[in-house]
Figure 1 (cartoon, rainbow, N blue to C red):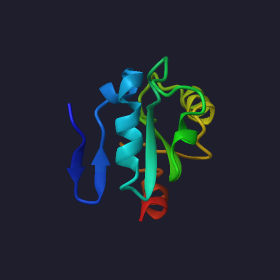
Figure 2: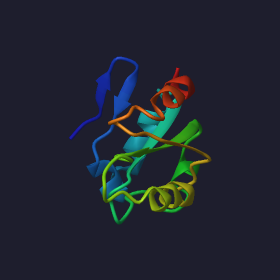
Figure 3: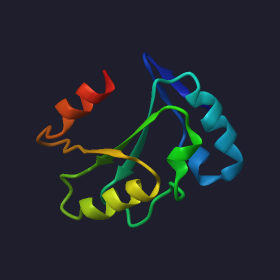
Figure 4: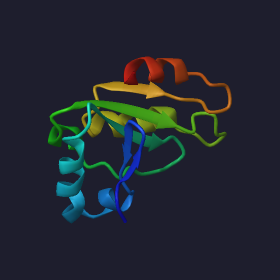
Length: 109
């Protein structure tokens, strides 16, 4: 269980969100970043992000809704989860059609 460094990206394990004692590791890791992405699966009925989680970071925070193409998606619910977590900017990404990918790229790069 450790952050993965993939080129210009850092991916923290999901377990870091599931256990509050790992929050300092997420915060410390974010110091090396220009932006924090919080990814919410549109098919999940719950969120791992606590209310106002984004306020822990001194970086720009972008919410990303994934799996928007899934038949059982709940995009509006996923958007609410990210808004409650403090994300001001939210992008919905459809992996089948690619909708939202160009917007996401333009915000990241």
